[in-house]
Image (tube, rainbow, N blue to C red):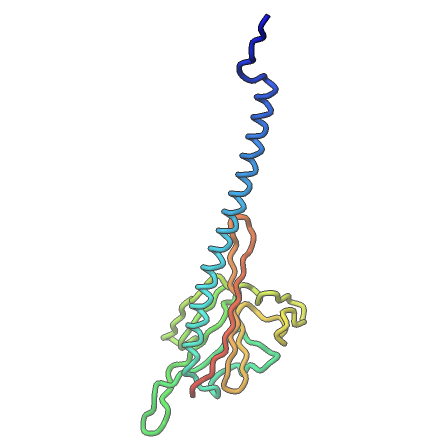
Amino acid sequence: MSQRGRAGFTVIEAMIALVIVGLVLTKLTLVVDQARRAHEEESVCMALDDQALELIDRISYALYGSDPQRITPFMQTPLPASEIHFQVTLGVENGEAVWGEPEVIGLSEQGDSVYWGQNVGEADERMVVWANTVSELLQDEVLNGVDDNGNDLADELGLSFVMDGKSITIRLTLERSKDDEKTVQVTRETTITCRN
């Protein structure tokens, strides 16, 4: 009597194959989702970093032509300020410096926007919001009266100015929430020297 070979799979073999395929697909889905999240976070970080660089350059350019004697409040370490009032020289006429209108750069009252203003409080006042993704506090800072981020300043807001002679150090932290409610922060810092 001859034995015939089996044709096809048993139900148990088919179930095992389906379970293995299901596990592989689940793992593949998790890997793809992690890659998507990492790409999203990197994209948000790059966009914030570009915005922070552009904003800190804009602030630096605005302050570059100012006179340290016309800057208020006069911020000295360890007391940072979140708003700076200044005047820029327009040139020299009859041996005297000609000054532009009073300007201000600072945080809004809500603390989430950086604005620039000219002739604030006057009839011809001009105000422009330069960014609205500013963090409440500088990265790694906590409102506790202590220097949490190790830069010799306590409780710095998301935009801060510190003056040392003719030099002004500008620190800025921008933040944005992602779809998964995780917050991404980017901090930039620069020091400029007033040319007047």
